[in-house]
Image (cartoon, rainbow, N blue to C red; front, side, top):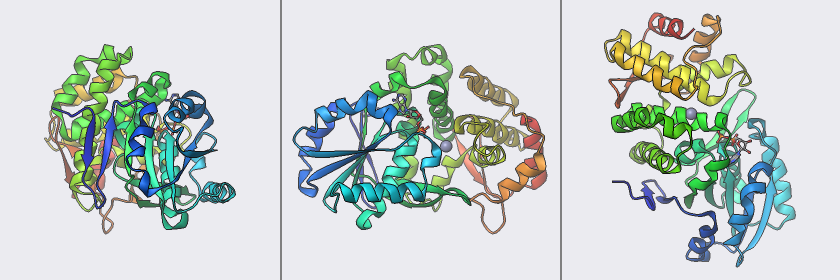
Length: 360
Ligand code: ADP
Ligand code: ZN
């Protein structure tokens, strides 16, 4: 049974995730922690701030609060934006006793979190994720980063927040294409470690599509529980945390090929999951009926299972640059049945090429 209120993440610096809590309630929780800081800096984006800043501020009346706004878009995850935030923060008198609240999706969580991790060698951070992807995935595990022309998330650190504050009601305003990003990661989580979740998604496909919030909460809670478990076992990704990379080696190659413009992260992961499933099938780790169930579930959420690019050689080339590779060997995560995945280190280029052919 999941405790809906609070899950602890094991870490060098353990921290709680609060689930199904109202934005307005964060202030009250912080009152009990106020000895460690005396003012707050909220980092958000206009889209999210317009909708949710007032609700968050409702609970923060007893604190001195400043807000910095960052435009939308992955390109904001840059060193230039970190420099800009630093200038603005210095102008506001932000110092080592400031608490940063990152209010938004994965971009704000990564950027605001990285800022908190390096400003004056690190100031306190609370993540308030407002997208499904951020709630079930990116706000958990302490990874924060910005991009560099040479690679995505190339500059970053492990920086566990003081807490993650998750209000599912913020999902009500999320556009479907953003919901899909979180659903792709959720199907990934099911395939890594939770067969029941996979079946729950199959059974509740229609309810999920019509945004039945009771079902969404159950789905998100189970999905994030997989992430919590994996990062708690292996915070610094020296072993089993790599399982969370299922579908991502293929997905990132696609995103790179399409220069992150022609495809969303969720769609990349979706096609990547199918490629991994096909490769697993060719190795006898997954039968054809199981591959079909994965494909049907992804299609049920309008996620792609085929891609329109003939550039197989280039996709292979992009996979060579995967951060997870070791000594030139491609490390892949493959599903073994539904609800368990394993790290595989001996896939040949030929096998990988055939998997690509299955999705193109
Ligand atoms: P991700 O979490 O997938 O990395 P982003 O941080 O890029 O996503 O956010 C995706 C988009 O969704 C942005 O335009 C952001 O402003 C918007 N957004 C974030 N949370 C919400 C929300 N709860 N309702 C509506 N739009 C939101
Ligand atoms: Zn992902």
